[in-house]
Length: 114
Image (cartoon, rainbow, N blue to C red; front, side, top):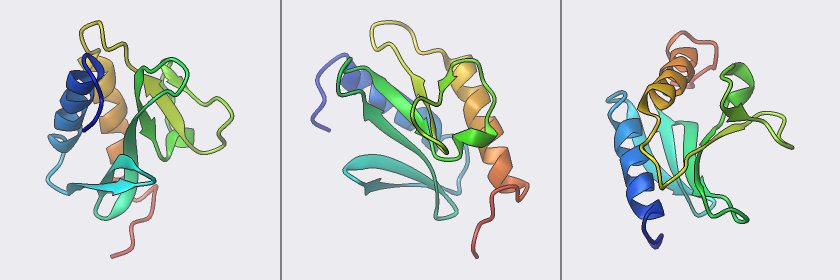
């Protein structure tokens, strides 16, 4: 990871939280970004905003997620959750978003090809 502090530590902590959610989550690189998949279906990405340089978690199926801190911006499908690398991670909010998103896959709202 080529990010500098404090972004590096922030992204590594987010990575650890995401991977700790479920044993079916795997990590790969797509479009030059760390991508996390649930049973091989893209689930979320970690990246940094080009303008603000702040890290964020991009939820692939964000349109299904209703959380006050998720931003849709110009996107139709995905939403992002911005993280301030200079503050403690909002773990409760992150866990809530990840759990809700994973439940969409687990319950079949988002289809997974076997």
